[in-house]
Length: 325
Image (cartoon, rainbow, N blue to C red; front, top):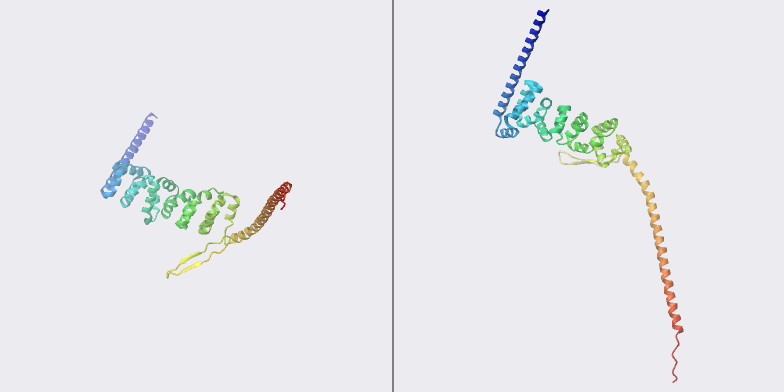
């Protein structure tokens, strides 16, 4: 029994020693890969790239980023990070350094022509881009590339819905949506989803309405009005299209249901208001006339009283005698 136990302990010890040796060998291999990659990056870097690498901290900084990549994804990730750096320069290494595994995976998921712009986007706002890339992957980078400075805001606010919208909206529409993003996000989930769906289906019409009524989503009635917008409920402002031959085709604006209801309602309200205004103006005119007549009458009585007093004084004075001729 003791002999068997001793053999078992020896076997376990040998296995542990073997695993430790294997791990040490693997770590050495990874270390060699990192060092080789660092040397390769500096060897193939141009003058400007070398200056940027020096500003980052030189070989120590590059090695640190590649070591982080090896910790997250092993030798394969180190090679992918190195390849991006060789193709796009230090900007790629800086972008990857924030979250090597997630960032490389997101870059791999992008069309090649979008990758450089994606790295520039990470450079502009590394905190926001790193956060949304960790959660949403390549779609977050794509949104930031399609609408610089705005796409990442849509993803940060609306998540995967923001990615979908960024693929459907023009940059101008994306900017308008970003202005109202917080108020839309604060809606109850069913209303939020419905509004976003309506924007996806008819962006210009809904966003123009939100621009014209900036506080409409702050009240239940306003939300209900927006939720009711469909088909011809809202009109449009018309459009002008320039053809290839230079001619301009203009579509005139037409009122929708809300505008058609709004105008008669305003007219019904305006008419009584106008009547009240006319009555008030007439009453004021009568009051002024009475007030002025009273003033005039008092002044007239004062004048007559003074005149009568003067005449009475003149009558009471003795007349001088008339001389005889």
